Image (cartoon, rainbow, N blue to C red; front, side):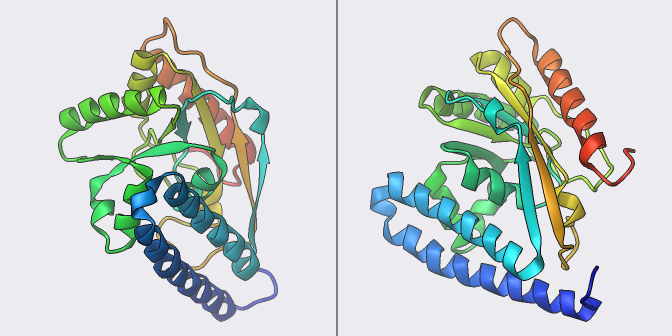
Length: 246
């Protein structure tokens, strides 16, 4: 880490999380106050919270980002299959994608204030302990969201993977795309090199985000869709990651 000592970067990380906590209190309470007006104000406030924290991260910890391939994202709803390495991509995707819902573990909804505020985006909150029920719920609620004009964001690896590692790509998001007929947009990024999944200190630098080409899903099986998305994401990761793939 340039210039600052480890203690200095530790202090900056502490400052970042302190600001993030304050923003949760302020914007989270505001979202709850406008709860009767859930749309569009609640959703816009949730996007504002993400944007504020991305900028705070840049100012305090020196973590910026650069996006390429943004023209690949169509105006129509899509199923977004994204690499999952940290909490950073949740902030980025929610602040930058125009109208999305998320597939997430339902335990997040139980977090005081934060979890309550998440409900404003109508997430698909699944119980990961019951895989069959989770898939059925995601297919039903995911198709409803798509027909209502909202894109659905899925992390096919399910949990965060360390830089250079590849988790098993599960079929849930691809099944939703195959059944609904909506296209898939794959997204790769190397956020885990700067915001580690189990690290407190943030590494300064520029995160590379690449939005992939549209994958048409009609007449393709879930396995074929999943494989195309995985191949593109992992190939792209080799070009933007500083860590050898394992």
